[in-house]
Amino acid sequence: MTALKHSRQRDLIRDLLEGRTDHPTADMVFESAKQVYPNISLGTVYRNLSLLAELGEIRKLSGLGDADRFDPRTDWHCHFVCTCCGKILDMEPAEASGRFLAEASESFSMGEIRSYEATFHGLCRDCLPV
Image (cartoon, rainbow, N blue to C red; front, side, top):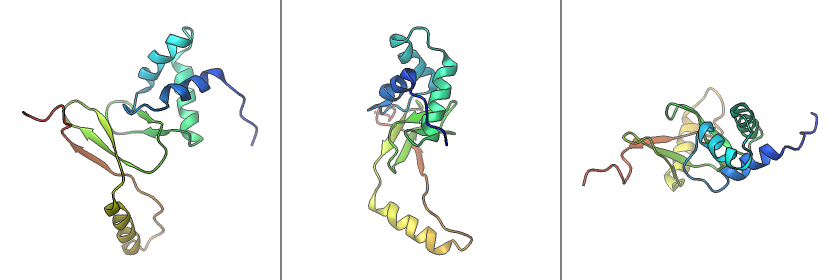
């Protein structure tokens, strides 16, 4: 495999995602990137987000809303999606998750389960009725 050429734009995109917990879309990252590089294109942002996800430096979250979202956290964790406002929140893994994976692995005879993703849906704290 050839070495990956250094890119200031890719570094910026990685830095813009660092520490974010709002799981931004590519458009949201693009708007932030334009503050630093006014001439950056949306295509450049999309390509670099896809590359960072392919390299395992970020996670691409598909199917949790209208657009793909991006998560700087690559460690195993679940997500919660608010069915009212669409907010996506990180959920820390619980001890029960390990038991769930172990039980699923024991009962699955057609291969080997190595990981899983879980998404919970409901109302976030801000959308709960008072």
